[in-house]
Length: 187
Image 1 (cartoon, rainbow, N blue to C red):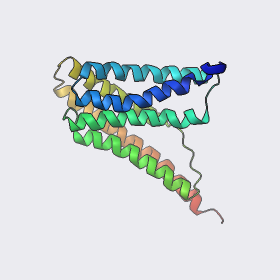
Image 2 (cartoon, rainbow, N blue to C red):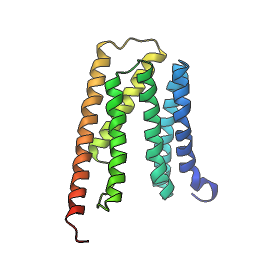
Image 3 (cartoon, rainbow, N blue to C red):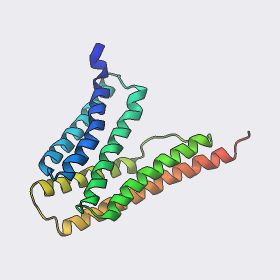
Image 4 (cartoon, rainbow, N blue to C red):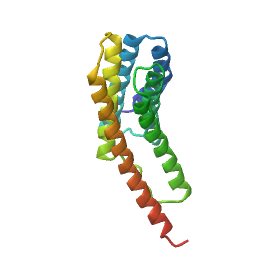
């Protein structure tokens, strides 16, 4: 890709970043059908921008930071507002949001300590993302179609909780290893 098209992946990511406050507003206004459509749009743009960046070797440094920021912002908006509205359990939203906040703080601490921390997605992190996205999609679908998830909601809560904790534990182990290596270096 050349010319303006080479910026298309970052433009799509930027749209996804803008989708986070729009999603929060739609949920607060009980516009669940529109929120579901926006969530689907965000998911499609995430797939397309990743494909384009890889296929046409147009990945940028900005995109490497903007893409996960857009993902985190969208999921934060969804879990925060859905918990606030009582559509998801507070403990589930707390785990999801808490894990992301801890990961951001861990990266900052590692950078300040000059620890050799490589920030790369782990397989459990990818699984966690898939489970969390599926969970939000399920909740939005249920809200948009006025379905009561009943027992399915509890199983979904448990699934999100387990993979989120496992992911936090795995990334925490990587962080502890990097901090230990930083502590054994010669100044």
